[in-house]
Length: 428
Ligand SMILES: Nc1nc2c(ncn2[C@@H]2O[C@H](COP(=O)(O)OP(=O)(O)OP(=O)(O)O)[C@@H](O)[C@H]2O)c(=O)[nH]1
Ligand SMILES: [Mg+2]
Image 1: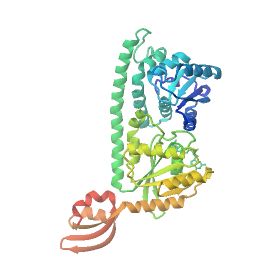
Image 2: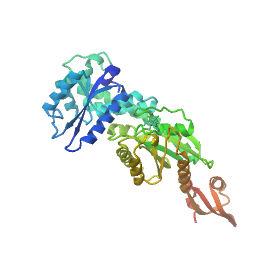
Image 3: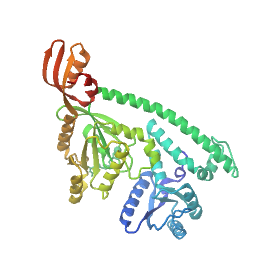
Image 4: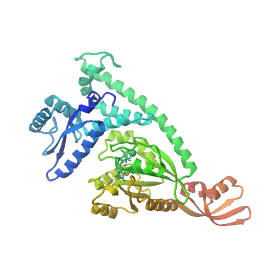
């Protein structure tokens, strides 16, 4: 995040107090979500010193939690020497400001932390553009707060020097600057997107079946791609190690070439600014012919993570694609019950360890079966003058029978589904 205050903090020594909320009887999931928030913090480089689950009775418009709770948090943050308080829930800019005033600490929420993690880890132009856009959209309603906090830094910056008291006017100017910046970045991003689409069309023309490896963050997607193709991708025990799609060619045991795409991980309650920003990257993933959905069965929340992944897929309208479900990290999973429960829920499952490279044979079988299923059989009558089409069909298809009738050729052929549209006029 270009101007987020997290940047100001000396991350390594920055101590965080995490606050989660739960309704009566739902403390357990709250604790798990706080663990995930801790991983996010750790990924960013923060040290969590305390996780505080708070029962939620009602939401205070001004400070999100009641004043007694906020005082308690203030005291705890003070005692533990925390620099930043992170709320697992999304809180409004107003609430954020108020809590900061009371506690005299920086206050952020999960969305801001995720945005910061993405910003920190984005390397390519496209990922950077996407995250910059998401951050700007997030900052728009929070400009007042940013102004009060960043006035110090920004004086003399792009918006010129200013002193406190010019606040309101400055916010207007800032808004305009941000809006202009958003427009500029959006245009730039459209360009990058066009290039990506051109690449994709080239790939579609190549007719090679594409598998996208998808799943919750940190389940082992990049590890699997690496194990299969020796791709030079980043594997890390941190959230959102991958922010860009990587595509590698791979030969199935039957010599069928395929493309494997490693993708950005999903996360529960993905901030909507990010879904919007990463839409094209995510869409790239689901433009595949077949999905390989990875689940980390060694994770206590494996089932919830798999469901969250489905939610994102639904949003991208990609639930109708053929899917293989991979139960990864079985080497770490002591809980046979968990594996069975997930197997029961999904079809076409395979247990494996991407790290120890076990279970790959069954995965290969399933992949070959899915590719075969992508092909369909058609009866065609094609004029012999359609030379180009005929040779493409013969090259890519599996001819089952063929016979000549005057100037036409009658063929029964099994072909990849991507040729369906081309041959439509000749189907009998
Ligand atoms: N024990 C064990 N660890 C694994 C296995 N597969 C992956 N890991 C570890 O899990 C961590 C995450 O792996 P990645 O491949 O980076 O996960 P990812 O799904 O690509 O994660 P993001 O890109 O962050 O979404 C790394 O520390 C891997 O070494 C496995 O089968 N067994
Ligand atoms: Mg990855």
